[in-house]
Amino acid sequence: MSFSRPNPPWEDLERQLRQEFEFKIEPRFDGLIEFSAVLEEAYNDRISQVHYAIKNAESKYDVRASDQIVEHESWSAVQFHEHQIVPQRIGIIFTAYSFTEIAVQDLCDRAKNLFSLEKSIRELRGNGLRRCRNYLSEYATIESTSLNERFDQVLRLGVLRNVLTHCGLLLPDGHKDQEKLREWADEESAPFSIENGGELNLKPAIGNQFVESGKALILETHLALTETLRTY
Image 1 (cartoon, one colour):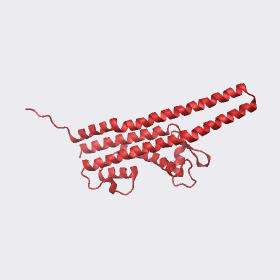
Image 2 (spheres, rainbow, N blue to C red):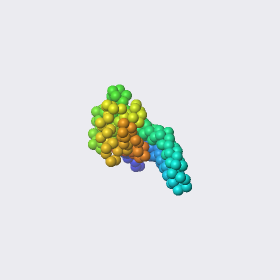
Image 3 (cartoon, rainbow, N blue to C red):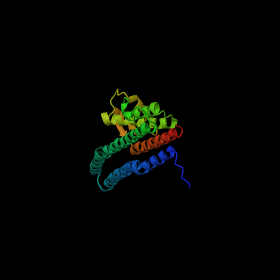
Image 4 (cartoon, one colour):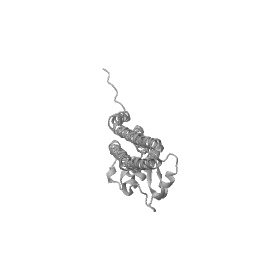
């Protein structure tokens, strides 16, 4: 009589994490991306309407009437941007970052059980993803260069998220992260810019950057846990 050999613990963990990501975590993030796409499409449609109205005014009316219509349509576009697009982009940022924090904290709880750690993440000082990073490194003794890089990416986005939380779209002069954010804004790939007076201009792709960076951190944490368990 033959018996099937049980899977190694790390293989079971890998399968469980993959299923959780595919059926629970990824759909949440993908929903944010789909919502963002619908939002940006609506905004682009509105801008196209403005351009059409301006062009139509210039061809049908005298200069004075054209100027009045242009001013009206331009103001309409500004209102649409300020009252609908910007708050929704910020909402996607906050939601994606929150999803990421919750998922990584859950993985820290799993690390405690997997490696029979004495302390839980909630017993550490601090909060958020920085505390998760310290817990995985110091207590679960997970050493991973690629995981640290993913944490760096998301925590950098977290600086912007914190400014939006506490200061809105205006970066105060002398803010502790002012220099850091201005240097970042000068990079070509930055998901935002800083206008005159410290106003933050969020680019259309900013929500997707938070989503993709969050997903990448979660997947890298999955990999680090399974690799650590393999050699445990």
